[in-house]
Length: 276
Image 1 (cartoon, one colour):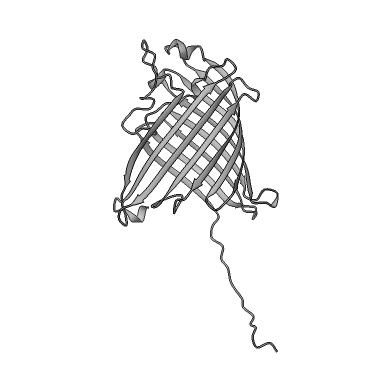
Image 2 (cartoon, rainbow, N blue to C red):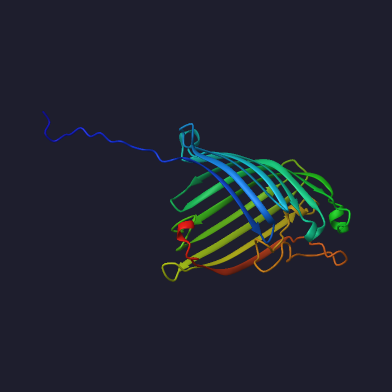
């Protein structure tokens, strides 16, 4: 008999791997809104993630499907696909509407615990419509245009928590090349930097700066769907598209080929801990 060994029985109860969410609210950018979604993080017991989401507001409607395999071909390589459809109302800013539908194939891997890189290919169709009273620059873009894009993003993430960071910083740089088929031809570059600093147990400062540049090539101009529009969700205190080149006759926002914006935010509790 082995006196230095023992038989141990362990009962393990697996926590729920899926969840369903429903939400209603109001946004100063999109008005009244409702969203619903379902996510499974251990699809068929293989650790795969599948999600289906839908949302509607007074200005937008969107549907999305996503599938991610975290260990593609048995390696530490994530792979996934996304399918999406979205309608957007830009009548207040620029007197046009846009429908976007398409899909994306993506891969991601880690060099270290903090340094990662992502590669993606996106194929989508943008449809500009309802431009009767819009600027002549917008009217000439009426119709459907196919965008075929390959891109990458490299990320260095030193945050202590990805959902509610209190310390650390985040850096990313990405670029896209459009023109592998389709109608658009452009080069696009984007960079982001965030710094988080907690001054007490509950008060966290966030400092950030974002930059981007897009330029057409092969004699092609950059279309509306790829230009930068600041305001609303991206620049507090300004209406959606409020910071943009404009048509001086119609005042329609036309977007820009580059942008730089930054700021500082303070996050603090409202005393409703039980509601998160």
